[in-house]
Image (cartoon, rainbow, N blue to C red; front, top):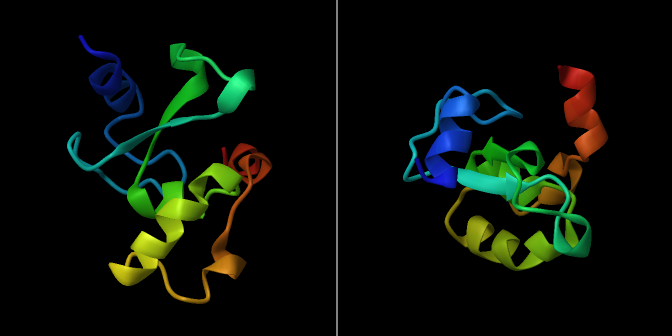
Length: 92
């Protein structure tokens, strides 16, 4: 089984942040720790919907935000909706 499908199934086909059902072809498999600190190991990967992925507090996501605003996925006043990983820990 490919990594993408394995992580999606492990996360019950849902965004781990907002819990919305998300199809395999629509989900984003996100690195919890990205860049030099991260790995492609299963324990560093999670399923996110596009909205939660774009709104994650990660400088690497800034390019995705403009596209998400243009497509109506996030509002122009998106800054108040940005979330940090520690917030996800508090929700579980």
